[in-house]
Length: 196
Image (cartoon, one colour):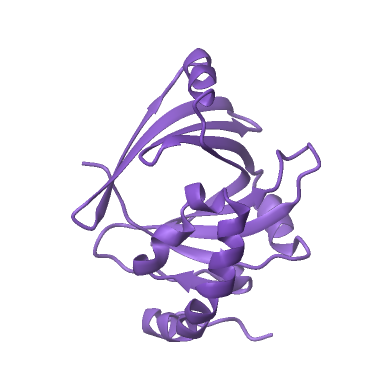
């Protein structure tokens, strides 16, 4: 059973420094994804060297775990499903691997990149085996605003972040508490923010 095990990290990149650092490592992937209901997502990924991929993802929370099943879909099916889109997210993703985790760093846009959109939210996800631990790499620590504990991760799903009103509410009401807890979480993990 494919199970998603990840921790979210909200980042700050007001001047684009992080995006430039990540782009220097490897090109980003432009993603247009939408949701037709709470468990079904469709995504088009435009990779500079691998071309375009369209996929459908089914997600279901079961006993505190997230079952995730992905399959490729045709352009025709993707286009048809887009007519039922409820929430839409446009983002650029940079991915990299560390010895203990796979990292995806997403820059969510106000409009499709190349169409005048600006970055409105930045989040990194560390995916790692169940029961394992991971270290936060320096490139993430340098831009870390706060870590999202699993009990709060439902507030930071891409589906919810598609709503700019939700982003404002969660950053006003939830973020201060998570910022205050982040140093303790980092200490428990053995990660330290780099010295300025």
